[in-house]
Structures are given as structure tokens and as C-alpha cells.
Length: 119
Image (cartoon, rainbow, N blue to C red; front, side, top):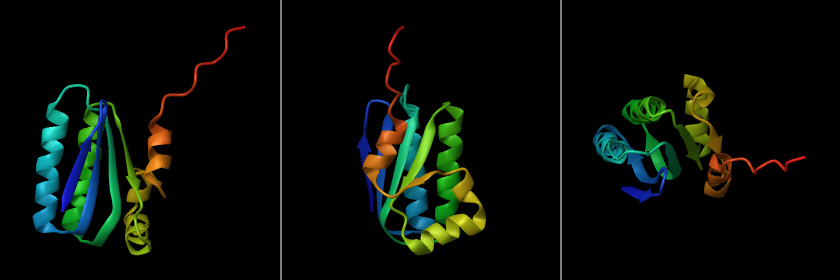
């Protein structure tokens, strides 16, 4: 199951169950809809509900990364379980897809820096 939570500058997509050939296709369709809207530059993939991810799922994550890069935006992964985190490390995707333990930490990483006081 894929749940999309849009925001002003992007979206959070919560993935539940398996990310395989079928659901990866659905994810790609959702991403196309999200990035068809102007101004969408941030994407958080909440993986905390995933129980399985195959090569099609990894391919969909790479596709998400590519779409975000085309907008000049940023992407983050949240809540990947140990098995998926290990898979991301073994494939090198952990180097291009930053991972945060919680949604709040990912959102905080996307927040603009506070203004600096003027002297």
C-alpha cells in the first residue's frame, strides 16, 4: 500500500507491505503525479511499514532520486528496517539516499536554516 501525504514543497510517501514489481509500478505512477506539479522539490519515503523490498523496489527508489534531482530538490528515506538498511548499504544507495530514523528528523533536515542575526 502507498499513502501519499502532500506538502507545499513536496510529499511524504508512506510505503506498507511489499515493494516489489507491482507496487514499484504504483510508486512510479505516484511520483510522476507528485513531480508533475510545479514547485515540488522534496520527497520523503517512509519505509517503516515495508516488510519486503526487491530489485524493482530499489529501482523505484533510484527513479525517485532521479526525479528529485531533476527538480534540484532533495530526498530522504525514513525508518528502514535492518534488512533494508543492509541492502541499501550493500548496493551503495545509502550514499545517495540519506536515511533518518524518524519522520521528524527527516523533516528537520529539510527545514531551512535559521536566519543569522545581523551584526
